[in-house]
Length: 222
Image 1 (tube, rainbow, N blue to C red):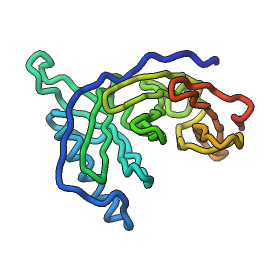
Image 2: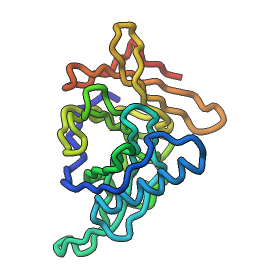
Image 3: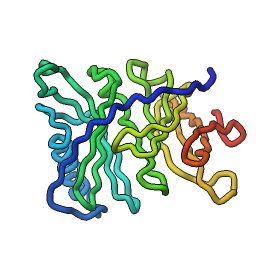
Image 4: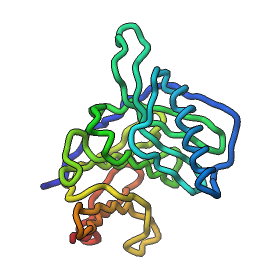
């Protein structure tokens, strides 16, 4: 399966919420849970949705950005939406306790709740970020996943995207210098289902903050 350019799947929603500040990092499971609970409250307020609930597991970041990313779902309050269910990707800055949300246009069906939450990887050139996510409506064990580059995720400023085949479940996405040029690449790890737990490593070069390129010479198959 070849990679294809992907149109943006996030539509900007210009909303934000702010509560009292909290530390960016947590030192215990209880502290992590408190941060997750507060992140959900911030996202619920920023989204403007009613009956807001978390979808999947939050992705925590122990880096200088101090961000938490999670997918939330709730009912729209605008009259023309007539209470329709809406899913949103929410970014919480734990240092300032501010939340930004963008509408996630994938299917909000219960089957998607079992899939891993989208992984948001902040880039050094803030507010740029990469979003890695399994495509909705596909089996957990096989299908496809998307890699989307944003110049500014909080306002949906989309730059480039790829869609790749997926043998297994999306497990991790991180920045690592894998070719020794002093510039980090995006490394995406997939793990197959079953007892083997074989891993696939897909590596992407982020060029000038504008383009994504898959690097087969650095990628590894089981």
